Length: 334
Ligand code: ACO
Image 1 (cartoon, protein in one colour):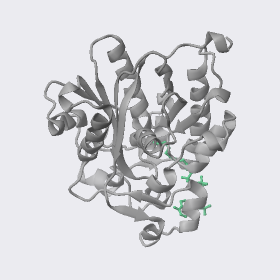
Image 2 (image 1 turned 180 degrees about the vertical axis):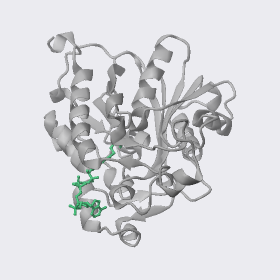
Image 3 (image 1 turned 120 degrees about the horizontal axis):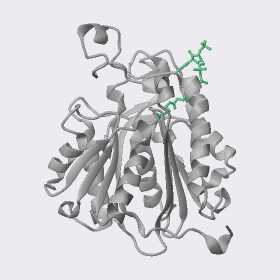
């Protein structure tokens, strides 16, 4: 396929974007007082210098609603225009109701259907792909897709190998008809349940219901095999990036901005290198937010737009990777 035979954009894309993070911040210097770590180690191994942290009263749906209101305003619509709310999260307020239903209530959008997507850090891109299909089918005109997390509530603050990595926040987009020549060109979703043990939260579900023993043994915290995950993350994100480009007539040379899941600066750099995307085309803000799981891509998009880096007409690729394992990619004309 040559440049004349490029797959056209669907005309369905992102009408508005916004993010919301809690005011509280946790710097590497703060972490030095909690666990046996150093600012130098964290920066060198992860690229993170600080992250946001919610207070005891704030839950995921509060951050999600904050981001949603900004995306809705950016799209120039009102909450009552939304037909469907999808929240990607690994840290829901509770098992049920879904976080999406809690957001629907907060937004006062009774007309909207609402559900959560469980795909860990890939939850936002899974949601974006679902939203495109709902708009394409004509079922809904506007779909709100949110990635929202309060990971600081599920990490073990005595485990230096995980607690330094994660942060809280939410990002949201309104998906709808953006017009000819723009919007989503292609998307790809993948998973491998066989590697689910690399990143999980063992207790609190039906396999290991919460009990005094599970709490005593810290089974309600994130468990991660960071080293193995690092290698799989790079391979999976690089291969997902290529998959969304397949049969579109575009190559990685055509990309103007690459936004990957913001897990770790070394993972972002290694992924970009593997698919030969130069650093100046890679958007990264993991330094200031840490790994916010499903929220990381929409936060990055909102920030890049606000800074004027992400401009209308640009060819953008979004790529994620997360627990499950799951991975996903979306190619779009902004
Ligand atoms: N401070 C100081 N030392 C530490 C810390 C810390 N915070 N954490 C680990 N160490 C020590 C280890 O104990 C180990 O010490 P030892 O050699 O004496 O045994 C040493 O550092 C090296 O440990 P490794 O685990 O090999 O370090 P690595 O270079 O792999 O970095 C890290 C660890 C940052 C976790 C890396 O593996 C990584 O980023 N993995 C991916 C993690 C991730 O991003 N997960 C989420 C992705 S998917 C999602 O977002 C849901």
